Length: 522
View 1 (spheres, rainbow, N blue to C red):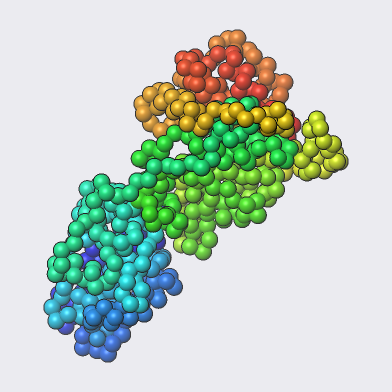
View 2 (tube, one colour; view 1 turned 180 degrees about the vertical axis):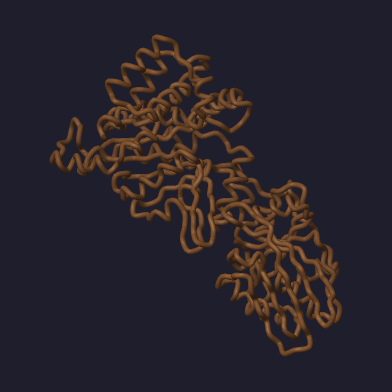
């Protein structure tokens, strides 16, 4: 929970009270919070901080006093109380430092420093008065605009991030002394221009043209990108499963502004946003190790933060060696893959993080990796094979739309000097298919993989012949109702790729053959 602040001064008999209107991060969104500072001059010096602060907030008083002293600013020598309200909401993080310091500097003057109600202030202080970057500057600025504020003061490193928000002036501040001069109008500062904020174009080092052979797997990758479908690669070691997965972001469409803002918010509160970026414009690719904990994957911790599934927002979550993950860890993915959000409940409250990403997984067909390989012998026993396959549950497989075998690459393909299609060429086809989906849903960012039952009844209708074939497949392969829905959604994507208004039998046939692992692994 990170705080931005505007300040109002109220004069009382023998004491001065300052009320601060703040924005605190709750999950990835900001909420309004009120801070009251009361100083009584006719008493011994004491600084009290109340309102359920965490350790970082409690320690802020020592940082603040040192920063004020080294910045040549004074503070009230009497009894000062800082109240953080509502008192039942736990306050977290060092972003209180700057507003508390400015409030105390105002109270320490013979006449209170005039401060505008239109400012929102957030920043961590160093002992020498320098201002360090904070988390969540974008969310704080969005909340400031919603509350009708017109100006935001943030650390200089966060200024470009905050300037993404239109309709509000953003000032990047280097030190407590600079903030003091700005608020007292003793020096003019220019706000950061939104037009000058650095929006870097995506740069992909991996290209699909680097992959030799594997035409069927490349087709699966393109189909998954076109409809935002989850994908599972299965094959022996060294067939290129990871290589293919790492090239998926390079064929996905450029991020919409709404997608960039949502992703930037998550990365900002997680503290992984590059200081040189104002917006995340390149789709994330997160690849956690199979030893990851539930909290690391979904989010959580003492002060709950986003996990890998949220950090992959509008990008790709790649789980290599899928059966090596703990089964319990994999099972907790089921709800986020359906609802596109993760809710973490703790005694102090409930936080929700977004989780709208593509799941791409890779696995070997057996423990030794060579089951079904035509050139190498599998040494696994039937029991080992069965135990290995049971590490992945049927309900999880149901949520993976495409399941593709990746065979060994032939020598002729490996030694060939000709390049395949580039990522740019494939990306154009993916964009074309997604444009059809946007037009169908009135420009909403709703891809085929996310169609609701009501939308499926409208857009995924099939004729009698196709329906009869699907009925036969459902009975013979014992597919679940969820698999039925995902086959229709995948068929809709295949039809869009061919610019076909209706789902036809060839589209359904190709969609069904991408479900072959269902009967192998359950």
